[in-house]
Image (cartoon, rainbow, N blue to C red):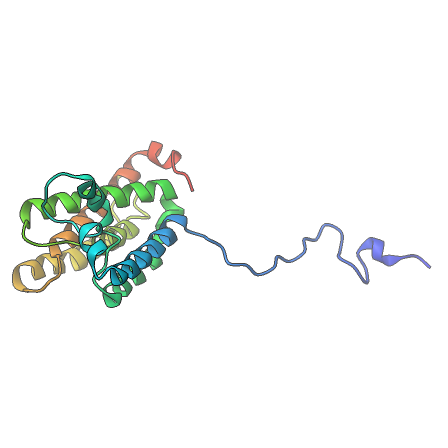
Length: 214
């Protein structure tokens, strides 16, 4: 009797067919996930140190130049006042981050986060010398506008992007002049402007796209 298994009939795996992969969790967006985990660790550290690390390392405010001053330029985006503040930022951050990281590359997204953080820090120290700034909301607003620019092509602006800018940035500009609260509306506006600028730059210059790295 002929052994039909050699022809892929009956028992065994058919010739050329790949075995199904076992279920596993992938670290699919390294910059996004690392940022989120780091923010959670910073929040926990703040509770342990009774707020010392949050104030001295992960909040930005006008102060004398020092090593801590440099850390705060970037580190304030990792700091959050409490769990509610953390969750409100990380929900959108984790939703938008992987999409942008796949589109623009991990290295480029990290650069955009760094640039947005420094710009927000400089404006905070110049115009709001008596207050501290912390949290990733400015980065989240940058991501919101940048996500709406994903399909932007040279010579054309997506209508969806225009509407997102009007809705998100328009409401922030309105609130900045009409609402008195502890929210830094300027940071949101600056983040949105950064997102729009990044979107235009990447749509305009093909070399930036060619240099993307995952």
